[in-house]
Figure (spheres, rainbow, N blue to C red):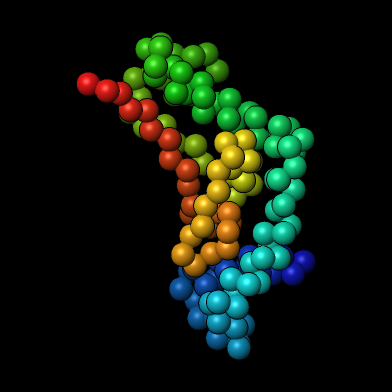
Amino acid sequence: WSAASLSEYLQLLYLNNMSLSGVAPGLDAPQLGQMMLLHQGELDVTEDQIATLSFGSDLLAHLLATMQQLLLGRTVPGLASRHGDKLVYYAGHDLNLYFLRNFLRLNWLTESWNSNEAMPGGMLQFELLSRP
């Protein structure tokens, strides 16, 4: 185990309503946030453009093709969704969010987490809107 993995494990325990004092005596939520910087540092590999292209491009291509099939009104081969679907859901890991963040040049700051940290259960939502 690395310190980064341990901090992520403690974060998941905390988010499942387990008492920090029971699993890590003396540790409070702000200190846990500081520990998560170790995990964030480990994920800095996603800031590398080559890694982003290698590991994030397939997901981005699927997202774009999904939007394209709705706009064109016909099913795009290779996708599990169909052009008439009202909702398409892609599930992944925090790394997937980081690669998309890098591709799309996004930044975020949540109230209780570190800058650009993908929190457990976090998501990106894309909507296609039209003008009447």
